[in-house]
Length: 252
Image (tube, rainbow, N blue to C red):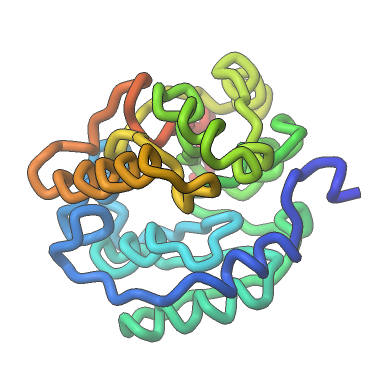
């Protein structure tokens, strides 16, 4: 049963996507613009992705996939089980004049072979790391890159304290567990950290003067992405904890 392998559900994500507005991303956006910290991170880890097939698992309303398609020329595929999330994904890409292939399915039911497999903020909702990583590995010709909110950062204390309901939907999987799951699928795995500092996780559930200050500080930290090289990160402060995984015997 899916509720035994995942903390969230279709209903959970439908509620999330229903509240998310669509935004136009400018080429100068510090996060997802042409030279934003996300694409600088991807350039560093992947090199050129022009014309490469990329699939994002759990990719509804993904601004990261949008950035890869718009500014790095990937051929994008998004798989998600939320029909509402995929409807909004199509709207988001159409708003930017970008074509995207959307697949509504449970990720365990899909097949195919892609140059790069990604997921951003999905693994931490899974209870069975091995089976999830194994399914992702079946889709990858050569490389997987994935990240999750950095629950190891100092700012995670405030996240747990001020947004406890959100926190309970996340699992901190150790490096050892993730490395073992990747190795079992024939992938070498390297840990990475990137993105602005994690000061607080929004939206804040327990609002007060302290959380208002933390939210303001978070916005300032994100604005500083215009000048700070957030494609490099630190375990104690960065928003994103990532893993770059390369197949030992890639498909040619």
